[in-house]
Image 1 (cartoon, rainbow, N blue to C red):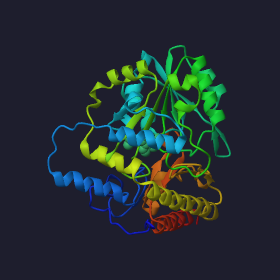
Image 2: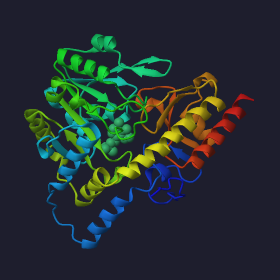
Image 3: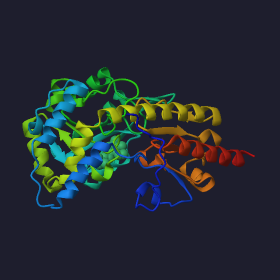
Image 4: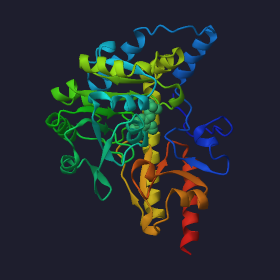
Length: 378
Ligand SMILES: Cc1ncc(COP(=O)(O)O)c(C=O)c1O
């Protein structure tokens, strides 16, 4: 069966954060939410749950853990022994906040980075030491020298985003081993946010807990089905924590996470266990959108700096060679295209373009942006 990702679906007036925040005058290519219908298996499982019509306290059975263990085995060759290593979560963001309390010290993180990854630990009352990634012509790498310079004795947690939103890197085994060595040297726990691991176009995603012995025993690796399967509001998120004491500590600190909900778990089983072909086809649609967008940006805005994404559906672009103020606000006011401002990610001046949408919308947005800039340059 071929899935139709070009199908028109109106999302206006559906209480969609992405579409209804700004309303019909704007094309929304901002928050990391996609415009595709969910995999059919999700709808089937939800229907079954709803038809039963009773929503009493839910007993989370083994099925979800078995599905996740099989997913790890098939995707990464990893042996993840269900509940022993997995903690189900209400979302990645609350886990990012809670993890910063481990060890009672500061945390260290690279910028630019996913806004909530930067802010959740701070909101939880902890200090984040921000260290820029190295940028060589829009190819970003972890700058270990800069990390060594900035780290303090009381730093306890390293936050990694892999694949990295917003710079689109899929870190190599060599890079991840260096992260693990750095963490070992400074006795850090690594919190690895792998929310985008299912959207990989180039390279090979390696779960952090698989990198080496230190990584296995000193990491909290976070996942959710929100991104590729577009169920951020019906999320199944989870942490993999192989070390027993660390898992117990995380669960103690995260007591208020509460229990899981029946429909989220059903959707989790459908997305991780029953949607392989749908995901494969969507990744190929997204890859074509990435190629199209990167090409069109280069043709239409030759002076812009465009990242070549290895992963994620979030393009990272610097238009400032056209004027310091050619940023997200500029395109919002002049093109009525709503993008994410890089400032939110510690990447001043950049914009982030979400291309997980129908190709026709992407083309319309590019046309509007091109016209607005041409008008400006007149
Ligand atoms: C890197 C990263 N982590 C986490 C999230 C959100 O995770 P969740 O919706 O599971 O809380 C996002 C959403 O864009 C993200 O980009």
